Image (cartoon, rainbow, N blue to C red; front, side, top):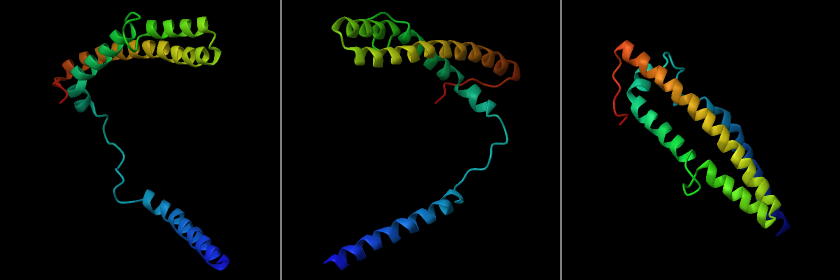
Length: 133
């Protein structure tokens, strides 16, 4: 019985080793995509209205009051509630999420401004802006 266990363990190790050895071969598979030759401007211009809408909705949600799920104000209220309840670990966790969410607002505002410049560029180039579907 001990020999069977050793043989089974050895078989598992051999199988695992063969799978690991095959991994680099999979990385160089023929399904790998070539490096891009352009910047994707046509596709970016086509998706622009949907992208602007998506960023705008996210900023509206983040800027909402404490009744809006996902807003900075709602998370601030939760941090305050955790502090009042004496839940220090929860307060720390939520406060870290709040820090990220506030930075997300800044990032999305920058992106929104960048998209305005992209819209101007697309119009100057005669690129159509579609519905993004």
